[in-house]
Length: 136
Image (cartoon, rainbow, N blue to C red):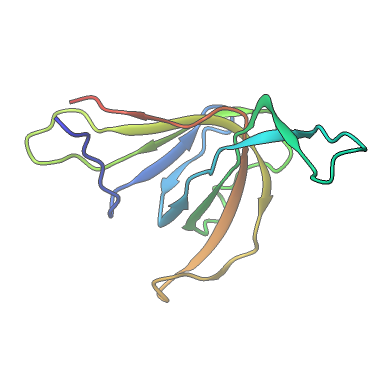
């Protein structure tokens, strides 16, 4: 059966160290890229690269409600981040998306995408590929 994931009201994000937990308004999951190494010989007329075998796990950008008493720490150690998705009808356990990384930036509060509340964006530099975990 195909995996089912839905992102809607009730989606939350948590991390391990800050004990941070908040509703998630939007998320941009990371694009994973291979690092390249230049491998050009002077006599060649074309610049060449080879795969390094290393991957850049990218960044996750989260949009969350701004809550002054519920903030993440910029520049802290890596943490495990878990996005918990709402249940489908008939499911008993929610599906999750998990990965590790550390916060590199957070914005000041701004008018959110729904124009009814203040939100902030949090950027997490990933140090693992994020995994989709189907539990049903």
